[in-house]
Length: 580
Image 1 (tube, rainbow, N blue to C red):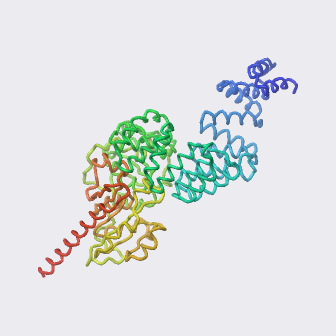
Image 2: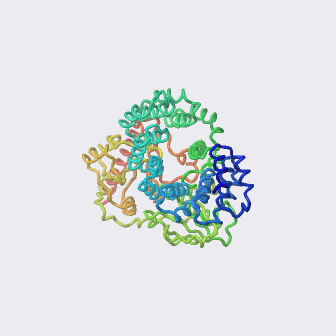
Image 3: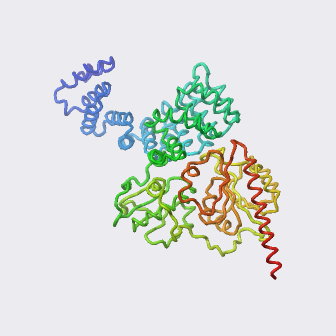
């Protein structure tokens, strides 16, 4: 071992060039797995990653149970963010020692990079059980995965545990405060902001979440004041642009966006923001470019199939899938129709909740569930969101309909429907953590004026929020929240009108060609802006909010038009009675 002593001493003293020279002077270096590994270490510390990689690989091949070069290879690929190779070498380490806490953490990290989130959490937890030396990082990473996947009630527990172990870690503090903001938990955000962070030491983080707190309290001008003072930080700029648009200050939002867009166009964390902003403004060229880089797309689905980018589909099989929500699948599935004109073999993968809505007898189109897909059977793939850009300008008005109308003539037995009155289905709020929240949803009490009308109302949404529950129970509304989506579809077909905010219910009813009134907030999703003129739902009428956080004008408009429908129904009944 004496021949390695001088190398190690020089490495420890950061004399990496000298250590490298000594390694290269070793006799029969190519057959010495220890020396090759040490040579790789000297090269890593000089940023000679290609040479280091080659020597680590040589070392590991000479002695396949020698863990050090495999570990070093993993760390190189981590630095390079090469997720595939990270996973490969992390698995090698686990195979050598599955009780090693570091190796379990490495594999968890690699799985997270590869978007295998459930497996990643499993190995993070195992590293914690094995007493990993930096448990706070494992707890923090679990929290991050859960928060990114819209599970903030679970993630908060892991951020708290991480913070208990490391109260000075800025990343953990930021994530903890972000989680309270996502929960819209004003009380705990304010308490944590004052307890966990020093305004003097961490002024940027403090100011950012102080602005977030003011937004949640609806003290918008105070939030804007903080954000304007910190525009040197891109996070503040993005937050302010969104706030400008959400509150109706569109010109200020556009101006600031044009000032900063070139600074963030290479930041993958900003792709969703850039895509949504460009698409909302009608800049479809840039919008689709960033939309194809959105987070839900890069997670990677059906990785063994080639992405379709417009090639000829003659005699080819293409798989189309949706990686977004139910509403997206319903709304954008219409773009399968022009695809069917250039491909005779299209398979569409549909979420389980929607599978029964789609027709199964359309020539050239197969409707399947995720479990039925064999990747070997397809030449190309494309996600539904990316399919739009190829066909959105084409007018879709052919005789083919994708949706089975659930037998329009069938009377539902799921709920009692009294035809002597107008029967109206309502969905006033979407998922609590869904896009556009909290602004796209209403409080149920905002609709109080509508409930004074002589109408039968039916609740079509699946969740009643806590703040709506008591008022909901005081109303005479037929509750359909316990029915599955297919049953709700049957009920929709038996109603006269659907009134909904931007949820899957709005898209479902509109796709059935049912008379539907959509309620949109001041700054809705991009699909309701310039894009809405392309192939709009023929049965959908939109009621747009005109003032931030103020619904009275919108509700008054709906109230007036409902009264008109009631009068029409009464006139119709009178004519029928007189004709008898």
